[in-house]
Amino acid sequence: MSREPNSWEIFKKLHQKKDDSFVDAKSKSINDKMEVVIATALSGSTDDDSSEDQELNINRMYFDIVGGAKKRCVYGLGSQASTLYKDMTCNLRVVSDHVAEERIKILEKVVSYMREN
Image 1 (cartoon, rainbow, N blue to C red):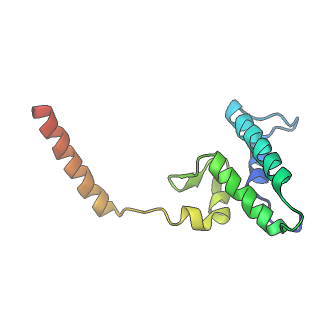
Image 2 (cartoon, rainbow, N blue to C red):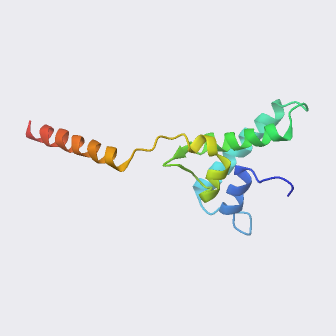
Image 3 (cartoon, rainbow, N blue to C red):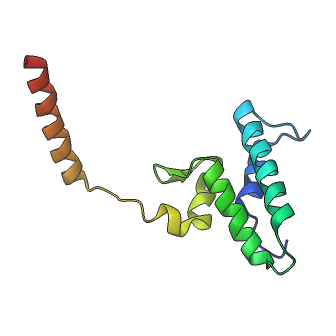
């Protein structure tokens, strides 16, 4: 391949068996949704669209279908998510351990107060 694989290609490579069936129902469902979304997008696209724009759109479509990034991960892509979605996963807020500990202490106080009342 002369280009980097898109999200959907990586997903299919990781979630399809040798007989082209999917490893589970969730994987098949995601693939079916992608086929519908891409077919719809291609039916409305023009020949003026560049292949790079289409690749970005496929990655974005996949990102939307799987529900975006959760805990800095994109479902079905493993470690490849960080290379495909640098701008989408890196801008998630990261809370330092100190701040997290403070928040936990506050929440524990709130819970204990609620149990007393």
